[in-house]
Amino acid sequence: MANNSNNIWDKFDKTIDTKGLAEDVKTAAENGGSYKEVPFGDYEVAIDKLELTASKAGDPMVSVWFKVVDGEFKGSRIFMNQVVTQGFQIHIINEFLRSLDSGIDIVFDTYKQYGNLLMDVFEAVNGNLEFALKYSEGKNGFAKYEITEVFELED
Image (cartoon, rainbow, N blue to C red):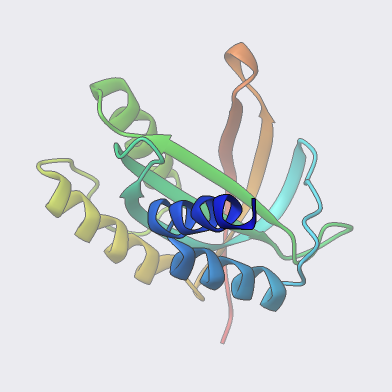
């Protein structure tokens, strides 16, 4: 009986990225460990992360992490993830990127170019700009993210 359960654990170790999972545990501990869902509303945020990554299904996806910088949810994160395999999806992200007022021309040519573009936008806004974010429920229950104001940070 004990031998069978060992086989199950071996199977999990082979099929699940345990090294990545251990890193996720470490990250959760460093970020406070307790996740408090931020309700829909208006928030002042900074952008903590902006990158082209892969969805769980392996599709190209833009991931944005907003960090709430003021109010009751200060320090909490709001996550925006948008798969970008269709024109309208890329359009949604392009419009969002333009609303950040980074000064960078927002154009999609290739995924490699787009990944570099996202890094450039992140570099331009991180530590330089904060935003008024309207975080609301959109069509079909999907979250909607709208930048309503841009604030320049003073040195």
